[in-house]
Image: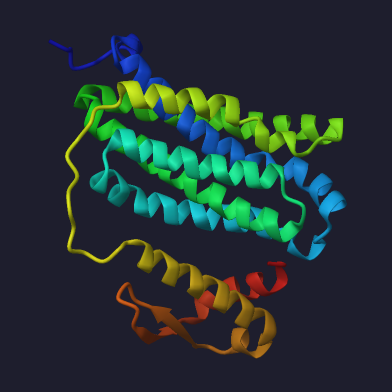
Length: 267
């Protein structure tokens, strides 16, 4: 019987060792992918061009990872932890290969979006593993390990990207996750439990995320092209509900600062 204050070593007993390695490294891969671009992106722009789209590589990765995280619960429910993890890993690997072999900045942006979608799925499945594979007394420890991995990735990501940028081979920054993710996929296949798929009548959750993303992009563009919008006391903002309805919402003056900031920040 497990004590109410479980030790850290309890995370490494039996099959929990494999689970802990899977979820912490999955979070680490996502976080490293988010941070490494800061130091390698100047080399990418110098090679492929597209300085106008300098910020889009990070923006698309972040948006796609949010969508992937939202859809992760559905993927796990329709498949299971084992097959859902493989789907996320394959999507992420496809995006990484596309980034590493991109001949043009547009191809890199598309591959970066695919990479973000896969990393979002991995993050969602990792947190799903916490609730399904760990006892209640261990979950605080697991979440602490995940938080620590975010800190490590924040230091390691720019360092890895800077090493490849300094060597003149920026494409290697996207290949570096392959030797890590392939063994993790094999480990997930042999250790994650199989489960029965569940069907849902609800709409695909990605619809709400896509509507939210569309709203952010549209209103950032509006704020950049219509300075007079930010000077009014109220803004009439279009919002898209999850069902695809177009409604109009008044925005108070406190939101004007956000649109002013968006207008001054290049997309």
